[in-house]
Structure formats: structure tokens, C-alpha cells
Length: 283
Length: 175
Ligand code: SF4
Image (tube, rainbow over all chains, first blue to last red; front, side, top):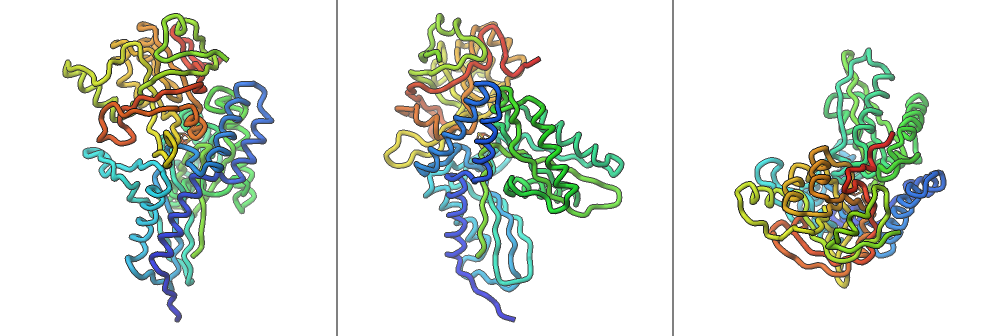
């Protein structure tokens, strides 16, 4: 069996680029949805808010600065090929160094504190990142990653539904969570829903769902239909852009699923703001 | 669109109505979670605040670093509800304008009505655009807090919306 060696430097550069790019350049999926939403709004206020967001994202790209001051905590989903060896400092340290350089050299805000309760001291380089790694067959490393702002992260929720709750239970929990979030997560939002697995698996799926293009849909037609239905219902709530009223509360709903236990149906809702920053790279 | 100045005059403040869109110029202070916590603790201990908030404006923001050659990095509002616990004691000290994003709780709103103050919002996530209205930045105190330190911004035509006016009308409450 051939083992492939990848240098730490290659990982560092790829991770650095990923975080800088996703903070400066909004995805086409989001930009297209914002423009469509603006044309669809009835009130001047809602259109003005969306225009500001669109202008903002153009300014960020042009001037190569972050679109939002909260450049987030770094989250990475890694598929690590079982025939890869990372030399030098090793994989995790290389990822951490990539994050450090992105946030330092890219003029991103450092928003991470060393301890959640007692010493809330800024680590000054936005490390450590949150890394979810899965070992897969092969000789490549695939990374899906993004910077997660906490205005929207704080509005996320998880619930251990039981099977009898059915699809109606899922819908109710998603809609209730979005209604509760109101104006705080900087609507229009992207709603990531994770269904199945265990308590922590559902939360990971929900986060991963926010890192998927909103122009895509779940491969199973039933879940794809649920994504569309939830989006429609969320947009009848009236929260609107910046929470000031209107037809655009969400730009997209993405669902990710996983098999689960006979007794359970965990559902997690991870809310992301319109500054939905993610990217991917294969090394 | 109305033009207003910070620090705000009583007359301008009284003329602001929920839903008004304004362009603000002048000076404001920045403070978010950590600076509020420190100021709140000082007040509880009966000590003086590092800034005189009387008649002033506080913007809830933690800017991104400035690129060389620019005054400031992206600097959009952070969620205001996290400052709700601390806001009434600052309003009692004469704070007149709060700038942030999102809803406020009932205690803040009644304190605003009592103290004749307003709550304005900037569009969350429009940070690169908002940065264009910031002309000058001075560090005032709590340097150790980094992005959470208290700064004074000089702003020109900063685009804001009146979310809660001095009579308690609230943009987030809709029939
Ligand atoms: S919720 Fe998103 S858009 Fe709003 S301030 Fe936070 S990172 Fe920026």
C-alpha cells in the first residue's frame, strides 16, 4: 500500500487561504439569494436593509476585508485519507497554524477566549479551532470549513425528539427555534438542521448543513421537499431582513441526516447569519 | 433621511421616532460585553466610571483589525441583548443613545422611557460598509481587552435606524 506524504506547509497554506477567502468573499449562492430577496421585498425598509448587505459584501470583496467584524470561531470538517501522513508538525498543529496565520495576516478579528467560564482571556490568534475528523479510505485530505459568528451561533438549539413526534415534530422545533431567534442572528439567515444520530452527532450535522451551498438540496427527495417547505414557512413569519419585518427571514434551509436509535429522533438547529462563510479544499 | 449628531441634543433626541432612518455624525464610545461587565462592577462598588456617559452614545461593537492605511476594520453592531443586564445602570447615569442590533428586554425599555434615551440599530453584518463612516478612532481605556476595549469613534453619516424611541415605541413589536 502506498503512503502519501503531505507537508505541513501545504496544509498550513490551504487552511490559511480557506479562512481568509471565506471571510472576504461571500459565496455566489448567498449573493444570488440576497439579490432575489431584495427584488421580492415589498417595503422600502426591507429593500434598504438587503441593499446595505449586498453593498457591504461587494465592498468586502473589493477591498479584501472581512464582510463582518465577527470573523468567527474556526470550524473544520476533515475527511482524512487513511494513506496520508502529514510530516513536519503533523496535521492538527498544521491546521492550527493555518488558522493562526489566517486570522493574523488576514486582519480577521480574534474572538476566542482560553476558558469558557473562569479566565475569559483572548488567545490573540483565534486558536484553537474546532476540528471534526473522519478517517476515510484514500490518499487525500478533504476539508470543509468556515468561520462561525456567534450572534447566530448563540441562537442555535437542540432537542431530543422521540419517534412519535414524526416529521411534524421536526417542523415545529425548527420553526420555534427560528421564531425564538428573531432579529438576533442577523437575518436573513441560513438554517442548518441535523436530524438523527446521537445528541452530539445531530449538532455536528446541523453545523455541517450550514456549510453546504443553499443552491443544493438533500439527496433524498423527501428531505429536499422538507427543506423547501420549511424555508417557505420561515419566510411567512415576518421577521424579515435585520428583523425589521419582511418576506425574507431565511435564504435557505439545509438538512443533513444520519441513522439513529430505535428510541430517538434528535434534531439540532444551527443558525447561520447572511454572512454564511465556508469553503472547501482537497489536498 | 434625518441627520443627527452625537452627542445628541435633547431636541434631536425628542424628535426621533421608531422606524426613522438617520445618518449620524459626531463622537461615540464603543463598549461590548467585557467593558460593560467592568463598568457595571465599578458602579456596584460605588466607584467612578472611566468615561462620563452623561449625554453620550455607546455603540456595541468589537471591530476587526484595521488593514495598514485604513482607520478601522469592519465594525458592525453586536447583539444588544447581552448588554441588557448592564444598560439600565448606565442609563441612570445619563447615557442617552445605545447603538447595536436586535431586541431589548422590558427593563431596558422602561429605563429608557424613564431616562429619555433612544436605542438605534445598525444593520448586523454590514460591517465593511459601516466602517466607511468611521473617520477617526481613539483608544480610551481597557486596552487589555483588545477588540473589546473602549474606543471613541468619530463618525460621519453613519446609517442607523431608530429601533426604540424615548417613548418606548419598539420596531420589533409588530401586530
Ligand atoms: S451574526 Fe453573523 S452577520 Fe451578524 S454580527 Fe455575527 S457574524 Fe456578523
